[in-house]
Length: 249
Image (cartoon, rainbow, N blue to C red):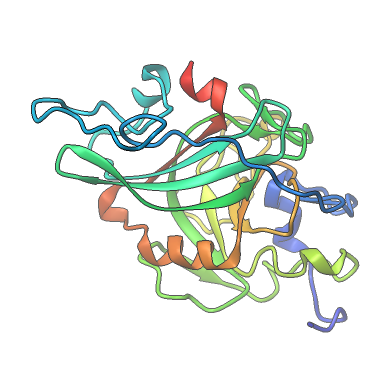
């Protein structure tokens, strides 16, 4: 448990589109999580095999409209399948391309915005933006765990405000910036908003605290460490995120 006296709220204000005055940032009361079925390669049963001549177009559950936005050459996709448009519960799956096929590397329970998802995210709407976004920069309160992404360690910038509930004190031990309305190649807490402040920003992958966020995607600590060590800039990693209906559309 860290001392509250030395904690500063600088970057935590930006994370998840926070305002420092919002004590419940990235959370509320804990709720039990029930995850729906996540699409698997080969169909719901996972037993079907593609014919030798088949060339999978993309990862399961993602329609052509969104998949067409995945950059050419991408070989790592972090897919976030939201349970519903207004649900804070989701499942995160890491897919990696092997030859012509996408394979599941790992998956974890996750949380998104406490009010669900939006195709037109606005600052303060407590929803996560639907879309395809690159993953290019990481950081956190803790030392670099061995990531290949550019990493900024800063005990002050990534410390949660001392007056936040204890459940949130480790939210930003590790973060990966989701490149929504931000300038790539900068530290995750960079305040630049290319589309304007009203479109929000500071959308991150970060550690889970047991319930919904103000726009970020949160996963358990072991998942964050795994992603940080696994994601490789040479593989052009992206996150494809949204509620399941929006992903299929």
